[in-house]
Image 1 (cartoon, rainbow, N blue to C red):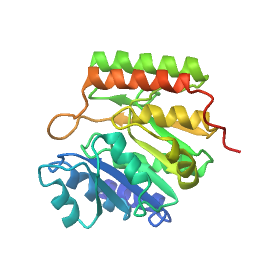
Image 2 (tube, one colour; image 1 turned 30 degrees about the vertical axis):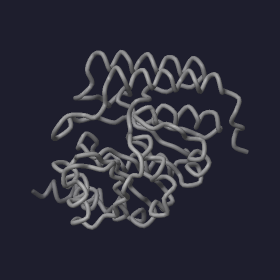
Image 3 (tube, rainbow, N blue to C red; image 1 turned 90 degrees about the vertical axis):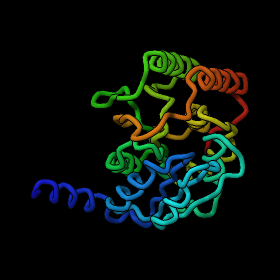
Length: 251
C-alpha cells in the first residue's frame, strides 16, 4: 500500500504545472464500457482538460463522459481521422500541449508523462512506438505487424525518416506545431496517424518517438479493419509522395 501511494504521489508531482496547459483528446465510438476508466485515470493523474470527440455512438458513451464532467464534442462526420481533424480545429481544444489517446483502454495514461517530457525537451510532435526497446503490443496480429513494418519501411525510404511505428494513435503536439499541421490534414479514417507524421516531416517539424506498450482493449472489438484500413494507409503514402513538394517547410 505504501509503495502504491508513493507511486501515485510521484505521478502527480510530475504532472504538476501541466494540468492547465494540456488538453487530452479522446476520439470515441461505442466505448461506454471502457471510457470511464480512461477518464478517471487521467483525472487521477492530474489531467483536468479532457475532450471527448464522439462519432455518434449508439451506446451510452456520451452520457458516461458527460457524467464524469469532461467536454464532449459531437462529431459532424464519421471516421477517426475526421474526428481528430474536427477536434484539432475546435475552440475547446486550447491547451499549449495537445495529447491524443484512444478510449478503449489500450493506452496507459501514465505514459503521457514521457510524451510531455519529450515536448519539454524540444520536439514539436511526439509519437508512441510499439517497436522501440521497452515497448510492445498485446494486440497486434501477425498480419497487422507485417503491414505496419511495410508502411514504416516505405515512409522511411521515401522521406528519409527514421520512424519505427506509424499506425498507432498515442501522440502529443505543441499547439503551435499543430496549428501549422492541422490545415494540411485530409484523412477521414485510421490513416490519419500516417498522414500526420508524413506531413510533419514535410513541414520540417521536429518529431520524437518514445516507447509505448499497447494493451489489449478492455471491452468489445476494434473498429479498425486491417485490410481495408491498410489499403487506405498505402493510398495515403502514395498520394503524399506524388504531392511531395506541395507543402513548404516551416520557417
